[in-house]
Image 1 (spheres, rainbow, N blue to C red):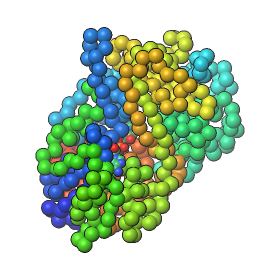
Image 2: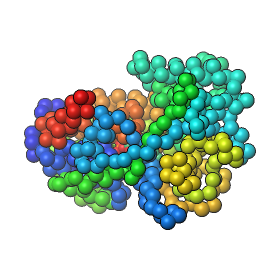
Image 3: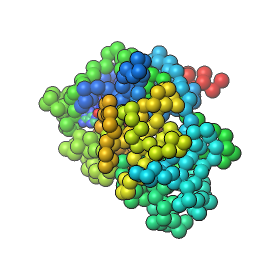
Image 4: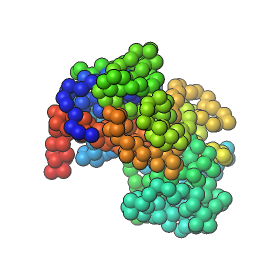
Length: 432
Ligand SMILES: Cc1cc2nc3c(=O)[nH]c(=O)nc-3n(C[C@H](O)[C@H](O)[C@H](O)COP(=O)(O)OP(=O)(O)OC[C@H]3O[C@@H](n4cnc5c(N)ncnc54)[C@H](O)[C@@H]3O)c2cc1C
């Protein structure tokens, strides 16, 4: 597409971090209207406040981990919006165990650090598992495609159907809300980073860090820094229609917004419906239609529901295997102090005694088809004045990649926007 004139009308659909970043980067140059179907912004971030034991806490029910690196877009955009979050370090420990006995089958970098510990069922496959992790890392390092599945790698190593294969599948199955069998169909390159959280071989403790006031802070800061963009909360984009002078967004309130360009920062399943009636978007529609999503229900509670029976086996992240599912309970004690827990509750056979609050999400399964859809959107970017940003357009579903996709669209629609220029300067500043 040729360089866009200043003063276009731009329609954005989706008020997650990608849509908000796009609105923030472009509102100085274009007239921006953003439709968000829910009555809150932030998408997969959901930071809640609560009083517990006479103290105030912020707890993330959705996105929790964000980059620590000051060169990251997350960090640099935060600074430009005036959002300067404090971080609390937490051990990157993980226990995989069988429900309900709570027998630990695999612990990674346990509470006090240290290398991976394997339960008796997984121990025989230990070396093979470590090679599997290396192999996934190699797929990433060599920038190979996304077509090889986790199941294919496990089969090559003779691990199909073994307890070790179940332990490996537990992590991606819990993160993506799918069954252990479905995890076999996920792209090995996609799930590699999860598996590589095995913990350092040299026995040093691995740490991650959480945003003290909640990971939703960046979305709130972006929204709070908007000056001219018009935000329509509670209005879903129903469909895109061709109008005389460009595309039109038809909202769930039946209002039609005529615009010069559209950016869809939506989950693929919503983007599919939006482009369904648009002439010329048939191949994009077909690719989006093959992106699978699953439900996730998260709940905050105070009883140790979902934790191993033996407290000594507790990690920050505890994956309970209850085939065909695997679900995680995150222990917030090491980060916040008191024993608070956030559990995946989508498929549990029982529920916590004291659920304080819950939140529902849809999550993309990183199958080879989902990755092919990302490639298709990249090839169609800008065609018919239609752009894609956010997790439907990125191979890696993370805050950082969602922001990177928004920056890439902004580079096309307003390369000289003041905020984009300032953002480029911060990259130089951060690397000094
Ligand atoms: C439970 C969960 C936990 C996660 N944890 C992490 C984490 O810790 N770290 C990390 O980096 N990433 C995490 N992710 C990945 C996360 O998806 C990305 O980090 C990022 O939030 C994606 O942002 P986005 O703007 O692309 O999409 P989303 O956050 O999905 O936002 C899309 C928005 O579009 C809106 N929408 C949908 N349909 C319509 C419509 N028809 N019209 C208008 N609006 C619509 C939605 O309501 C939503 O607000 C997690 C994902 C999930 C589901």
